[in-house]
Image (cartoon, rainbow, N blue to C red; front, side):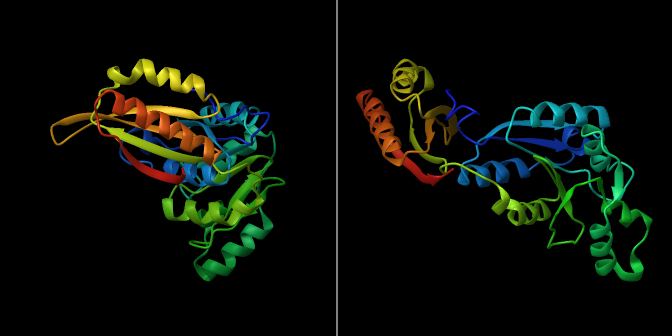
Length: 257
């Protein structure tokens, strides 16, 4: 698969998912799909996803590698009130900044919790020095931004709300669109012709995804790019390729991916 555009010409993003609970299988991540779709709609391809444990060295290494390479880096998880919530301290270490109690975050937490505010909850007001807060309209405790790194909650509803509060601050490119074609044809039957279509349309990502359902085997072909007319031409080629093999092709979707 080719890339939609080079990092020099299009804003790009990476995601660091933080949490032992993800790596152990106890919790299934759903944030990656949401962020990939929302960023794609904003014209910001998500280039890489890493899952790291609640370990400062692992978090620092991932964040520092990705923030040097991508336009934006998002992290999810590890900004709660318990001992294993170490993301804020790890981001401070990554940027070589002191960890502080952010005055505005303290004000927000005080207004939200009142007399129920305690030391554990105040931990959620900690940020690296100089961080900008990210609004949390769901449960008050804010996320934060340091340079091109956005630190978000791991709870999906809170993460989504935080992302929507910051989305207008992101500079994107043309929205990434997709078209999908499916048929009861095996990947091995289309591989050679599919490679030729990809070579003909290098500005489009074409992915091949086999499926098995109802006793049948087949393949879904997904084309992703930023030019709607080009995508339509690619779909025409994909349908013709499938029909030339004697199979019926079905177009599944169109629009932002």
